[in-house]
Length: 221
Image: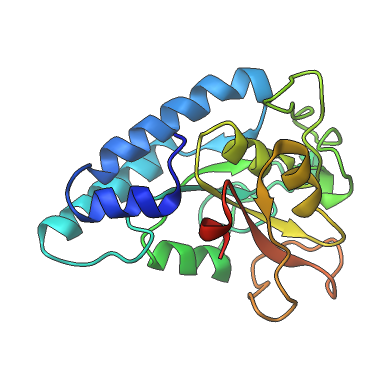
């Protein structure tokens, strides 16, 4: 999936493609990539396809799901999502499931985006290579012998390898920007206070911000 988010949303909203079809392709790409890159801590097949089917029904009813209509996204595994494991790359949280959804994710979903996967990360965000994860290191899709940067390395790989056009990471001192550089993506550290940090397990409360990883500047902003 090398198209940008706006192209996907345009095609789905106009009925040229179904959200279920787009999401199915994205999930298949995740399944293919996982043995090679270890980018994902969870691939949400059932949940993502259910959301896509609901969105297609909204469109059939003449509703407008939003500017990210049918766009598959992935989110870093320190960002809470209702009912989904939020491990922060650590075995300490291997059995923890979110009791609510982070504000940043809620807003993306309200715009029509569909979460299809959760991405691997350095344990509790402490690292710059995504090698320090309880579930094993993440590999750079451009060269599997190289690291993808971190700590949002899984999100960067998901975008660079064509699984999703947008992935959400978190940045304290470079955790979005470093993997963006290492994988050839656009990474944005948002201004503190501009995006809500509610539902993001922080490395540093006063420095952490959520931020997107995309393949182009248009999708990032």
